[in-house]
Length: 388
View: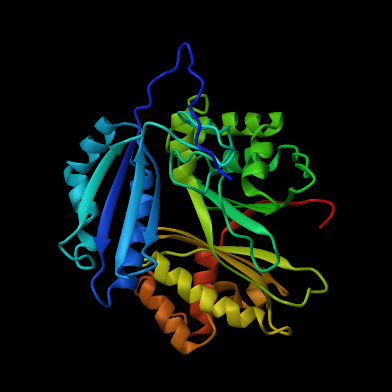
């Protein structure tokens, strides 16, 4: 039972400046899915706003038209500065067509907080160690959260860009460090880390059995990983200061690339699997639609025990979409499977969501081959624990 008790007074306790914002909404009839799609886009944009801590989206259990968005901010000043800005007004425009006019915005100062253990008081920001890619919005307090896939494995990715011309040096840095210990504790273990590059974009995908947050913190504490992160700093397009918790949170929250969809064949594959990654050239605002279309393909593809696709994960944030696929054959032998294309209709639907250029055609073998050659990510390192 959670109890509320008075915190013991502290001699030098600092006042809590956090702000809780409550937005009460009524969604128009027939606009619920459109509202969810818009919110999915907006929440990532809001997460990168300085001073933002976290947010929640809730739906009434009594009236499905009634929704609630709560957000937490470091202080009142940062929230007011953002909410009164032209950038905010432009950001929320897509939501206007989904929400009725009778909405309410309420703002509260945070005074006390109760944890599940029964302790109360103010909450200090979590210091994100170097290399920890949280899957929650910038400033989120607590471990990253991610749902396990059908095989019980949690998957998460981190993506960032490096300065043009530094790609070879970055690949050397990221492929040359010693692997951290796989066992975190009796419940959590690092299963696999795969790192790819396409041009100056880096994608690092991790697989964890157990708690993702515990695993990532374990990795971040390893001296060899800390050294790698520091060595990367001069090559990053977006500067970061890993010694500054707020700077580290902001960088890794923006770099988080969550696993939106996972599909795994029910029967284990015998023989070697070929791991492959594709970075899709998504048209503006079409990232969620691309992820959904790829997931539909992968659900069907992994259901065929004789087909080329053994497993696939679609990572997506806004318009950055990466599909990581384990194939029973080399990608060049089955370019359609490597790209997530099953037939002419699906090829046309996917092409409409991508920027393929005037010569792009995913309905032909030549077009599939050219697209695969152009968008396949180059493997940098792929490390598995000895138990897998």
